[in-house]
Image (cartoon, rainbow, N blue to C red; front, side, top):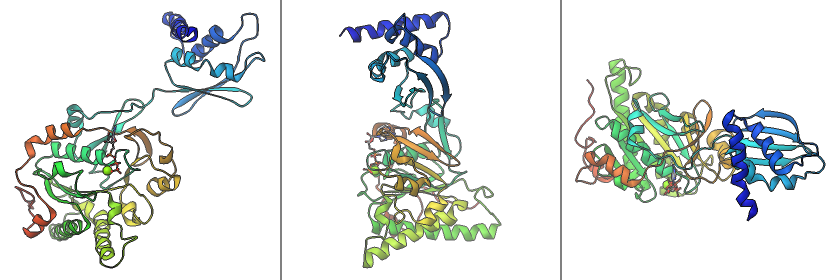
Length: 391
Ligand SMILES: Nc1ncnc2c1ncn2[C@@H]1O[C@H](COP(=O)(O)OP(=O)(O)OP(=O)(O)O)[C@@H](O)[C@H]1O
Ligand SMILES: [Mg+2]
């Protein structure tokens, strides 16, 4: 009781000293030693060195004989209050004090202002430790893998991506949404003008993917005839995003006969999109909960140069997605992810609520529900209300 009452007093004393002159972390640590642990007539702790790491600074001290490590651990709260930072202690003959820099927030909500800051074909991927927002440009790196164990934020991330792109490019974005958890997660997008089709099982997925393949083949031919090398050479403003949630359901591994053949065909078309369709305006977003080499085909992985990886269960799964360990060590925080393009960075991904999605996308809702089957029977596959034309 007395202990907890004293904490603010001591922290206050340290802050009061700090007021006149800016006190650095080392001085604050030593002040807490002086006020809480050392005896006036005995030798103080001896500072050995300090070293800065990416997310924390480590201070090393030699303890005087009368101070035990457990006495110091008991004062952790005093140190943390004085520095206003998270601190970890360890002892290996020397006392090591790790002072963590300001941590990532556990919630980073998407706002209209952030959507407005997305230029071109970019989406926000999250906020970093310094408070900087990172953006992903789908015209620079065209395809993306989203991975993570269940309930860490894959579907929320996909819904955020769809919402931002639809809001910023209502005239030019098209979506094929493949939601293999029964179509529930993407149902609120089904009536969107920009959505070409929503597939909710492997059969519908194959139908939608076959359509896309036909479109791509035609576009490749048109590009060749026009002498374009890339969509940026053409006047085409449209981009078509194929968003697959729970892609493991489309993996042929573990299936037999017709079910296997159907999924094999889906996988072949997705690999084809990742391999050849980026240059003509198609983008594959491939999300999976089970990143094994079966579920994440080599060609898809090799051609998806951006990854958003939430917490994974094993280092092996992390290696499959990121080519290195690390995702298994992410904290148990929803939305915490590693965003990898040229180098990995730990971010808190933007959170988006269903209410916010509905609010942003209200202007683009239509009456009629679109499904892969409906779309399939209505040749040619014109997106609702507009067609892509070569100018
Ligand atoms: N960026 C985020 N920030 C904070 N909370 C989040 C974030 N993303 C998701 N969550 C929370 O986590 C829950 C699960 O998220 P989500 O449905 O996206 O997980 P998932 O990875 O798709 O899981 P599953 O594999 O079971 O489909 C959400 O309902 C939400 O409460
Ligand atoms: Mg999900």
